[in-house]
Length: 302
Ligand code: GLN
Image 1 (tube, rainbow, N blue to C red):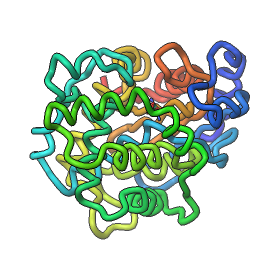
Image 2 (image 1 turned 180 degrees about the vertical axis):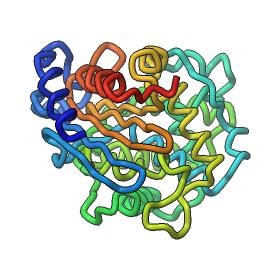
Image 3 (image 1 turned 90 degrees about the vertical axis):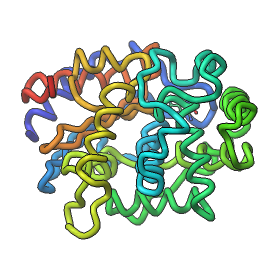
């Protein structure tokens, strides 16, 4: 595995320069583009990594999986009265379906859906940003994980589109807390800084039917873990979910920080990071690396 990871990074490195680092906020536009890391964590706890796998980066939309898991733990199936679990076929920050579908987002991994999930968690936790930080510290077994307050503040200053979604949902009665407070929680989750190793480890429970490696209380039941993997497989890469299924064939979740996490149920969790994005806002080199890895090891769930 170690040799395969190193080989793959060398094979995909020449793609550098073909994508574009996220520039909707200055704090992300400044991230050096030439960083590339990968980590693979086996279901029984073996870790392999190559490249810049220990460098923390902004997890952005990968946080939507953690928020969803928190909401599932507290609400169970009633969650789905507030949003769907269908792919949207639209960019992550699209507003169009919200108007037609009366403020009910298609799924938890587009921004509108993640905002509803954050609204649900806002009702539950006294300080949602801290509950989330502690939850990911526990999952990744790393007490040093923090949220970057400069990134979170910058996202808040550029919140117009996310705010528009949240207020539209409020107008339809599908938002129960103060919109500005929920936006702040959401941006704090997006601004969490984690490395490939942290993320591969934090997603391990999805490769283990919801169980923690150390035993004890499971993160999710086997059925819930299967459901989260299913939503990742159908909606984790927004309007490129089909392409990701076609090329990689695994449940996955991306973020505009350039990270992509994928799960091989029963076997591995993986995180790859390269900041340059393609047109859909997914890591261009990350996609290529996961495609090669999945192909090389025969991982596709299809
Ligand atoms: N913070 C970003 C936003 O809300 C997250 C988007 C993403 O990673 N796709 O626009």
